[in-house]
View 1 (cartoon, rainbow, N blue to C red):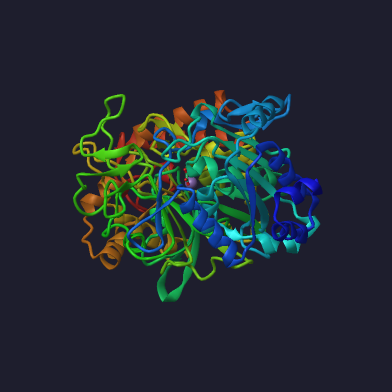
View 2 (view 1 turned 90 degrees about the vertical axis):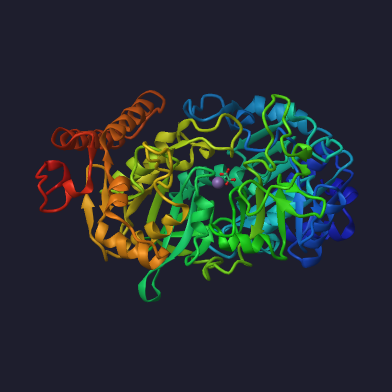
Length: 635
Ligand code: OXD
Ligand code: MN
């Protein structure tokens, strides 16, 4: 082992590995040097000099290119490698282990054999980068040391912006570290420096060995080991140890008199999670993945990451002022799959200004009206085009982002892309009701963040389905039981930014309306406003929203708008229960009993209300002391 390391590594780099003194680290690096056969190896510590080496390598290798704005670079993934590849992603399971039909698995022995063959000599002609990071803040109960090997300086550079440096954490934890390990190879590249062998694209997650394998792909969601790949390992570890890893933003919502109330929020990819975390007036801790632990009877959350790998489509100066500013000013940013014009500026779908007539993008030379092989128009940027940057440099970065103690979570939000069923914001009736009806029953119309058709309604419990390495039933049970032992149980809310007016086909809300929902939830989490209890949950009163619309957005909020948005859509709500129940009865093994009971109780409440008031019920029917009098709303 020592011999191989000494042969491939410079003396200086060998000393860096030796200083860590963890045989597991030595073994992992040695194994993949031997198998992948890189021309050279670079070991990156937390030093500025080492990190600069990676940044420069990305440009030198032709994986990234400099842009007009200082510090900005762009990168292209292969035209067919633009999103998470669910078809070639699998959890490796030993014989006899079953995770249920909604989770993609592969026999562990077969998967390992397959990927080892693919990785053999895959780094010939490339340099291997050895990187040490820390998932969660360093020096914390949450810290998980993560070791990444990759032959892509683009991947290593992304991780630099997205994760906390962890070399010193590895040294600190030494032999005792319980590490996560990632091996990625982009394999052979074409003349545009994008992956050539997409048929050999593989993403395998081995929870037995806390190792993830990724090959022949560059798209971040497939290649950045520490992101969605590490998430699977962490869910598994948390499930054994009694804590949660969630596909959740973490943000400070700023209430009256300087009060800051922290919220987590789960949304499927491309459903407004980042734009929520970036709401101006609030502060961001994280926009994608949170670890949650129960400490002294409270839910404590941390951001696993320190940067954002955000979707750039639709970002404009009006709706996203902070991101807009960052994207137009010098700082370290990587743009993927946007349009680059001759003057080395970027354009993307939904950006202010006219679309340039030509440039280069993920399809090569591009011009307005260009079509692909299937005669489909190629837009200037890919809908899943991304930008990578650190949060620290943003003006709205929360002061506790790196706190080893984390922040106390006082509210939890779930939301999906739903055009016709749920109201824009509603508090659940209890923790279990929230976990079941807002989390486990989450559905979303599909987007461009994964390969496949867009706009199809998909079941996505807690927006975490793609990332589960344990059976869904077990995962939901963990969430339901997470309430046990809490001194103060945070309220769970459901939000829906995508409700459409059936008559006009237009959205019933503007993008910025969500600012009001968060201010309302902040007041509610602190018990400062009352609610109207409906069969589906507790909705805001018009009297409370009206002044918030005025003070937050300067908008006059009409009773008509409120009624349209907050009307209970009984028919659609009942259909949703039917769909969800069927899934849990037929596709999910071991769904907790209480989940089915909660669905049934909601059906009963809806049917009672329907018998009295019909299919579409205005909030006033449920107002305390109103004419309703039905048992459904508890008055
Ligand atoms: C992401 C995703 O990139 O969920 O965050 O796809
Ligand atoms: Mn995500």
